Image (cartoon, rainbow, N blue to C red; front, top):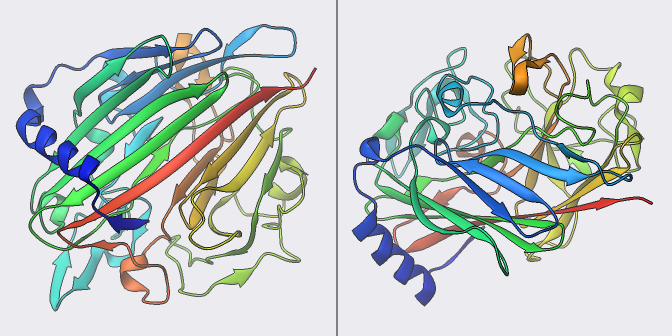
Length: 359
């Protein structure tokens, strides 16, 4: 996930340095991409996806992501609906780590641990709008954020950019890029959309099918911090290598799925298939590919009485998340793929969503 800096990225850094100032004065807005086949809306609060309208097998369009009607509500959100999370997504045990001989104490925002970058992670800041092409060929939008040295306890300045592109009829590309300028720092960005292919207001996702192309997981303790082991899924409810109705195995788990899968596929391959989700009622399906080593499968276990779009109230399992990522708590487990990015290096993370409808 780290590659040598390209000429294109140097141009990006120059642009970002000139254009990203104090984001606290940046206007918060709603922006759309539309290629004539489907549309996606965003807000620069958390660089979040706030709606995706897709047709079903009868040509009826529905919004397939959970969210809110107003940007103001996103500012008070605790579910991370649709946002980009970081500087380090997922959990860091004890909210601390050691790097180059220095112990860093982080913002502990969940039971003494750090979750999704702390109380003021990247999901809770205003990103600067860099570029927006709403329609035409390859509609796209780019948001940028400058994370300062010491923010939530992390070392060094970090310039971050996310670009969303409708690359073809029913494909959405998400490219996240980051570059530290002063100190080595961990970076692990994730896109945290909650999906319900039946429509955000269609009930739970338990009757939908999922297939995850991963033979192993990183087991956790009771605080969802990885133990450091990498365990096979065979013979467990986590075995989703074949298309599986979610409710058929979720019943064997305490509250639902919330685990990092170690993705199969050729190491170093640009994109590998992560998962396929299919809804039997609408006949919509979603295939996700990435260049990241892992994916957090989360079934919205802790959603309770969340008032969403048009007054619809979301409950547990109202949506599912597929957060491609580096492994959780990698900074404290040397056997996990490293997330440390040094000045002069570039962090790259690509996701590609392909949507389709069965006839």
